[in-house]
Amino acid sequence: AGLRAAAVCLLLAQLSGAFEQGEQVPLYANKVGPFANPSELYHYYSLPFCRPKEIEEKWLELGEVLKGDRAHRTLYDIRFGQNTQLSSLCKVTLDQSSASKFKQAVVDDYYFEMLLDDLPIWGYVGELESASGAVALAGGGAAAAAAAAEDNSTRYYLFTHLDFSLSYNGGHVIEVNVSADPLQRKEIGNAVGQQVEFTYAVRWTATDTPFDRRMERYSQYSFMPASFEIHWLSIINSFVLVLLLTGFLAIILMRVLKNDFTRYTQSDAALEDEEEETGWKLVHADVFRFPQYGSLLCALLGTGAQLLALVFALLILALMNTFYPGNRGAIYSAAVVLYALT
Image (tube, rainbow, N blue to C red):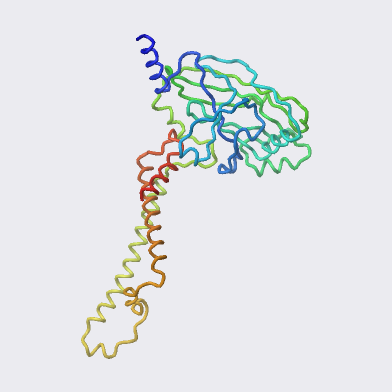
């Protein structure tokens, strides 16, 4: 009975996402890609980072897969509530292929994304520095990095040390941040045959932020160059503009139709001198003719109505705050389900 109760308690703790003191918190590497183009994504281990012998893939939902997530377990040993001053992750000997991959990633201003307890964290692979001492900072854009790379005196630096700053409340991880130490970087301009050691450090701090509010910071901050915030003023301005244009068009049409109705309700004597019909009155009987491509017309109308209903339903769900930052890939899953239902 005691073992059964302990097993039940352990299962409830896992379902609630709570960790015990010293329990390992898995860190998953998700993807890498150029900062200037968030839609261009690659597998994290497409770059020769430290990788385990057997790559363990994290179970993802449909929306996360459609979003481009490919989370895999890393070698980082992070223990809940335990600080790590300096720990070696692995040592990698760069050959011609791996050195060129890292170099091109630095030129293209690559960033990486990791997941710790489903909390995303971002960082940069490296940076460029010219001989004059000016640094092409990460996040400055691929164009600036490429311009700096054309200079033969440009140096390519790879960030080899990551500092993880983690906050917790009780047994839950509340906030995750990562930063690269610029003092611990490795020049990879001519790094063929050179050995690179990757290291990391972990620092835990307590916080009063409750577990159910840990995703609020992601709704106010975005690492990507463009955030998907709701701009209510722009929405209201667009809505008012559409109403005004619709009203003006309705007034014009009503005046035209009023004149036509007045002319058609005149006496028969006045209709004898009626001018030739023009404009929309020439095709007033075409609405009773069967279209030449009726099946194609029905298909287009049905598809358009389905897409219109899909977009309208997604907007309603978005206004209901269904697609909050912690619900990764929810909009893609909702789009697929709504498309199937409509």
